[in-house]
Length: 436
Image (tube, rainbow, N blue to C red; front, side):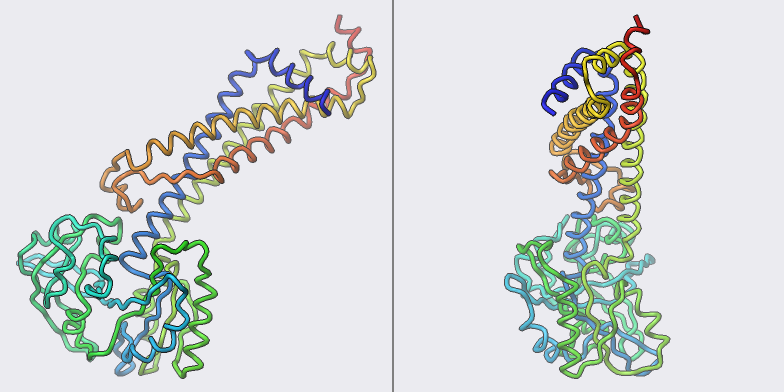
């Protein structure tokens, strides 16, 4: 084996001018693949950060209340009883925060815009409010009654600034229409698509007044795990424990579904029941409507991976096929001095594998380094920043991306060398004499 490896390395070095172009192509293809995987990972991380800041905890215990079968509100009527059941199950390092949620139309002058409402426990969340990026004003001011924070997109469409007055219009839990004059106390930075869909922030008290909820009610209890490795938290398993405990406590619990709470309102409204239903969801459920972005990036990664594999295999196949024809005398001589057919196969396959591994390794490592340098350094146009949840290019290269690119290219190179290696092994010792 060591002898074959030495011969393969010597051949690659002697034919370095011929292999340089192929080396560069494989390295470039591997680098592009690492770049796409880094982008996909960066968008996924940014999306989760934005979703768990605005919409969801790692886990959510919300509910739907129907005064009669023809109305529905996303609220838990007696939040204290639900909290008493789930709070002992909250993992260490996480906290249970109370948020509100709903829909409203914001108006200022003749301008109107409809959006989802996110209500905050301003005093309880404390430092966690810093996860919101504020462009103007201060979110802590939401502790004052009848105040609102708007996203940059909504403030622009309403033509309001901090200090201006706006009006929130909604339908109460009893079905009556209600309006509340509120002061704009903060404007948040862009948060991708959520800046349009969840652009109204108020306090829990303001939301109760707007929607007509009674004291003690809550929109949702969220398990927030800032500082905990989200990858180590089995949210699906924990959600199952929450559902089992709530059922044992006598609550009617909705079955799991990969949908955001807003997407469940219309289907549940058509059902004929009345009263309270509790719903346990994960952050992935609540961001299911954004799944097309992850699916698109995953499809792009697969496409680039397939192109990389095709480039490596076609390039190696053509290069080694030419090499076999040019090295007929060499192969015949090796066969004449006693080299077995399987050793000839091994020699050519080692050449392909070495070329694939070295070129893809170098290309992937350089690409990972470039991604680190460019991370958050390239500004994005407004239309693209909405889909990527960031004003700058979100790149998150990792060792796994480099390993995946190298393994893919090396396996492709090894497979591509099988046929040329088999042809080389079929040469007889006499071919060396015939080629003279």
